[in-house]
Length: 180
Image 1 (tube, rainbow, N blue to C red):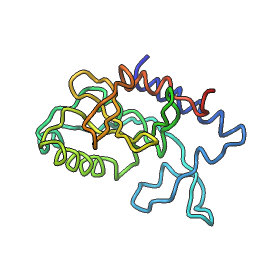
Image 2 (image 1 turned 90 degrees about the vertical axis):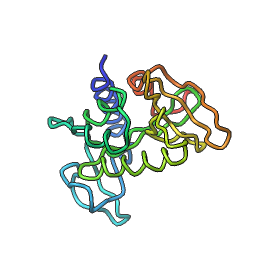
Image 3 (image 1 turned 135 degrees about the horizontal axis):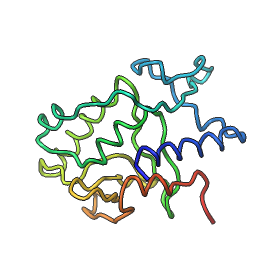
Image 4 (image 1 turned 180 degrees about the vertical axis):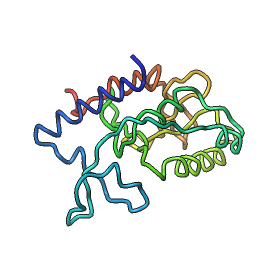
């Protein structure tokens, strides 16, 4: 299964839960900087709006970003950014609650660039790992930029725990309800 297919399956599962009464799974805070084609309907009284995942047909070229930060991205990072537009991709993986970065039209690459620069500044000006989300207890979800494994980084301790062999594996095995 490709990463794109794993994401498609994840969004179908998310829709199944939303259709079963958990409609908040497709609501997000409204952001006026986001290109509105991802949004559905009107902003509600709490400034939330419905969204829908949209498979991409035009892809980002990463050469300029890679050049500006002086690193080449693992292919799974590029595939992640070029698969879907979406506001939320989160769930439970083993005992961890994982929230991966959203890919929102018109703001995603600038947001990613800023995250990378901050991460690089805090890691001796290197990008051996690429930050791509957060874990529920504040650990950073990173992708090893050499082999694509997904790890949890405890920045304070300077330690890493291997979470998954790949982004595809992680997303394929995300659950929307905690398993007992």
